[in-house]
Length: 418
Image 1 (cartoon, rainbow, N blue to C red):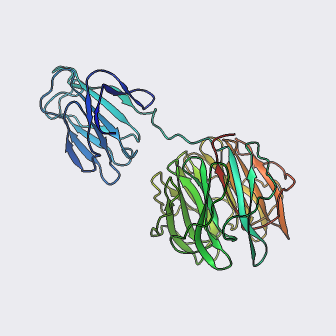
Image 2: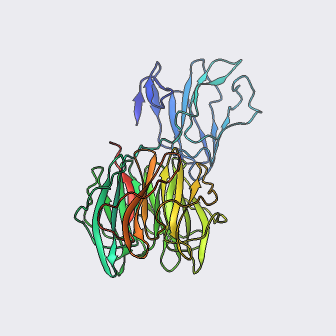
Image 3: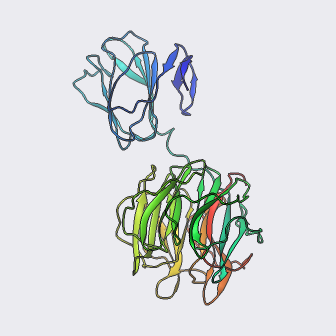
C-alpha cells in the first residue's frame, strides 16, 4: 500500500481501518537504523538485522506514527525505540524500549510532554500465525513392481475416505516428496523414474494435478518435504545422503539448492508443526537414525537434534490437531508400526506402540482440518490399507484399502473447502 491513507490505525483484527488524521506509508525499511516522522507509517523488515528506530526530537499532541513487523521477524531481530529526548510512556529516553514479538504492529501517538509517546494500540496476539484448515488430501505416484513407476493419484475427502484411482498426469516416478503450499494447493517434486529427477507437478485447490514443470535443483529421490511459514514448502535431503534443500514459494515456484544443514540422509520424512514451522526426521545415513532437524518459519533448517524413538527409514509423517505432528511406521530391521508424536514446539516424544499393519514405503497427509491419514506401503507385498489419525494423535486400526496398492508414493493436503 502506498500514498496517503486516511485515518489509519491498526485494529485488533490486524487490518487497517479508518480514523482521523491522514497517514503516508513509506517504503519498506531494511536498514539497521531509521529516523521516522509523524503522520507516516513504516514497514520494518528485520529479516537480516535488528533495527533502531529514532522518533522525532519534537512532537505535537496527536502526532501519530505506525510501525509494522513487515516479515514477522521482530521475534528474531527486535526493534529498539529511541525516543530522542522525549518521554515514552512517561519514561525518559534513558530507558531501553524493545519490541520483540513476531507479527507486532505499533500505533504510536504523542500525548504531550508528561507521558510523551504512547502506543494507542500494541498488537501482539492478533497477528500470530494462522494455519489454514486443510480439508482434503492427495496420494500420488509410486510403483507397483520395479522398475515400472506410476503417476495415478487418489483423492481423500474431508472425512478421510480415499477415492479410487485417478488417471495419472506427469512423469511416473517413486521416492518423491509432496507438500502443501499457497494455503490450499500442493506440489509433488523430485523422485526416481528410475532415473532420478527434479521435475515437479502442481496440484490445484480442486485436486487436479498439472503437467510436469521443468526441474530445479539437484535431481534426487528418497527426499522429504513439508510446509513452513503458513503458505510455503521445502524439499530436503535425499539419495546419496544429500542434505541440501529447495524452498517453494507461495505460488509454487521451486528454488535452487540451498546448502545443506545437518546430517545428509535419505528415506526420511518431513512434516509441518506449530502452525508455521517444519521438521525433518529419521532416515538412512548408511545406518538407521532418529535425528531431527527443525525448519523455521523462514525456511531455515537447524542443526541436528539428538534422535528420540526407534531409528528407522521409509517412514511417513503428517500433521494433526493444533500445530502437532506424528511420525509413523517405517523399517527398523523389520516392518514397524510405532509412532512418535511431535508437540507444537517441535519436540519429538518417545515411541507409541504401533497400531495397524506394520509396513514401510508408505505416505501420509493431514485432512479434515485437524486429522491425519497414513496409507499404502509394503509388508511382504504392496498394500493399500489406510490408518486414520484423530485430532489427539491416536492412530486407528486398518481401513480396507482403496486404489492400486503401491510403494514409494507421496501425499499432501490441499483445499480449505470441505
